[in-house]
Amino acid sequence: MDAFLSMGGYGRFVWPSYALAAAVLAWNIWSALRLQRNALEHARRRVAIARGDADRQAL
Amino acid sequence: MATWTWFHKLSSPPHFYRIAGKMIPWYAIPAAILIVLGIYGGLFSAPADYQQGEAFRIIYVHAPAAWLSLMCYTTMAVAAAVGLIWRIKLAHALAAATAPIGASFALLCLATGSLWGRPMWGTWWEWDARLTSQLILFFLYLGYMALRSAYDDLTRADRASAVLAIVGVVNVPIIHFSVNWWNSLHQGSTVIRKGGPAMPPSMLIPLLMCFAGFTLLYAALACVRVRAEVLQRERNATWLKELGAG
Amino acid sequence: MTPRRKRLFAIAGILAGVGLATAVALKAFDNNLQYFYDPSEVVAGKAPLDKSIRVGGMVTKGSVERKPGSLEVQFLITDFAQSVKISYTGVLPDLFREGQGIIAHGRLHDGVFVADEVLAKHDEKYMPPEVAKSLKKPVPPAPEGRT
Image (cartoon, rainbow over all chains, first blue to last red; front, side, top):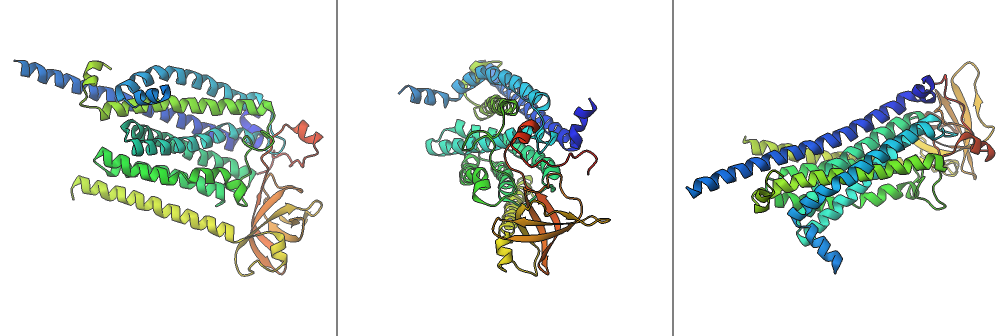
C-alpha cells in the first residue's frame, strides 16, 4: 500500500494529476447537468405562462 | 441520398432533442465503464516504465486530456463552419457546447503535463513548440467563449465566434506535428506513429480504454449541453409546448 | 456606466488579454528556437558569448565527472559531429543519464558551457524494465532517496 501511495517516489506528482483529472471530470458532469436542469425549468415556466395566456385569451 | 436526409433531420431542433436524449445513456454508460477500467489498468495492472518508473502513469490522464482538447477544438471548428455555411443553428449550438468541455481538458492537459515534466524533464514549463501551441489552444478556447458572451444577439455571437474557431483550427495540426517539425523538449508521439505504438499491450490497452472512454464522455456531455441550448434557443417554438414536461 | 457597457469592457479586456498572452507565448517560443544551438554550431562559433542561450545534445558515454565534495558535475554533449563540455552545479533531473539527450540553459565561458539549468529529454517509447534490459536501454538510477 505504501509503495502504491508513494508511486516510486513520484507520488506528489502522480496523485495531484489524478485528483485534477477527477475534478475536471466531475465539473464537466455537474456543469452539463446544471445547464440541463436550468433549461428545463425555464422551458417549463414558459410553457406554463403560455398556457396561462391562452386560457386568459379564451375567456 | 439517405445520409443527407439523416443529416437534414438531425439539424431540426425537436428531432435532435429527441434523438440526443435517447443516445445519452448509450454514450455515458460505456464511457463510465471504459474510464474506470482504463484508470484501474493504468494504476494497477500496467507495469512501471523502465525509464520513468511509476511517474509514467500520469499518461493515463494526461494523454486522453490532450486528445480530447484537440478533438473538441476540431469538432468546434467543423460545427462552426457548418453553421456558417449552411446556416444551421444547431451546429453553432454544438460548437458553443463543446467549447467549455474542450477548454477544461486543455487545462487538464497543461496541468498534468506540468506535474509530469517537473520530475522527468526537470522543469514545470518550457517554451517548446508542443507546450506553447497547447497553451495557445487553451487561450483560443477562452477567446471563443469570451467572444460569444460579448454579443447580446445570438446570431452575431454565433458568427463572430465561428470565425475565431475556424481561424484557430490551424493550431491543431501544429500541436500534433510540432514534435516532428521543431526541436522540442516534448517527445514524439507514442501511439500514432510509423511502426505502430511504442508501448506493450499491458500499458497500451488501458490507455486506449481511457481515450475511448473520454471520447464517449464528451459525446454524452455534448448531447446534454446541446439539448439545454436547444431549449434556450427554441424558447418560443410550439414543439416545446407539445413536449410538455420535457 | 450601464451594466451592458461594463460587460463589454470586461469582454474586450478578456479578449485583449488573450491576444496579449498569445503574443507573449509566441515570442517566448521564438526565443526558444532562435537561441538554441547544437554542439556543431557552438564549436563553429555561431553561438553568442554574451547571451543566455540553450544547447542540446546527447550526453557522451563515460564523460560524466563529479567533483568530490561539491555538487558540480561536468559532462560532454555531442551531436555525433562535435562535442561541447558542460559544467553544472546543482541537482540533475532524475532522467539524466549517459546516452540520452539533454537541453541546457546557460552561457558559454572560456569554451565551457556553464549551465544554470539542465533538462533531461526522453523518447516516446515505453516498456517494462525486463524488456529494456534485453534491449540494453540506458536506465536511470532509482529516484528513491533523491529530490
